[in-house]
Image (cartoon, rainbow, N blue to C red; front, side, top):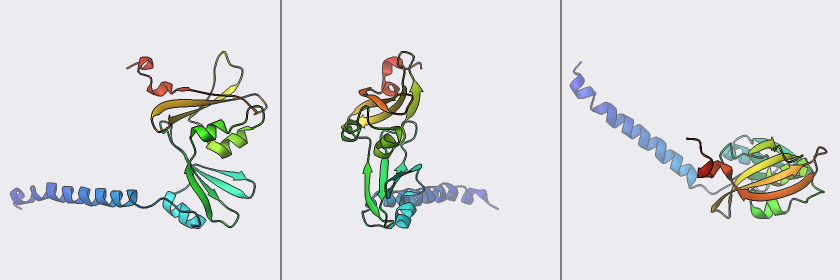
Length: 172
């Protein structure tokens, strides 16, 4: 076999396969998001398996988690008829401000904004802290912290800069 003619074709084949894969990925980016009224099966086919499912009365919330360094989290609300009611990004100031101090429970917070980026206890604070690293107003790297007492009731909600993006705290 004369490899002189075979080798140049291999990079062209690789480039063609890569271009095909990239164009296929771009096509899914330009599809409209799931729309209200779509069946639960259609939502799952488009979005995949949710990271968590929460029950909210007679509706279910499908959480599509942001991951460790994500700043957006989406929830798909599925009605009792197994159809999509809404699909929205839930890490917003409006949703965080709607958390009611001394009233809401951990379950209420999970239904409103989903699971946090991090769960911790700070040395000087006697509460469990749920941290949500989010993109405030689509611009600022912020962290909303929801504090729970030992009974699982919200005691405080506070906003500040996200330490994951603070250059002064980087070790490397």
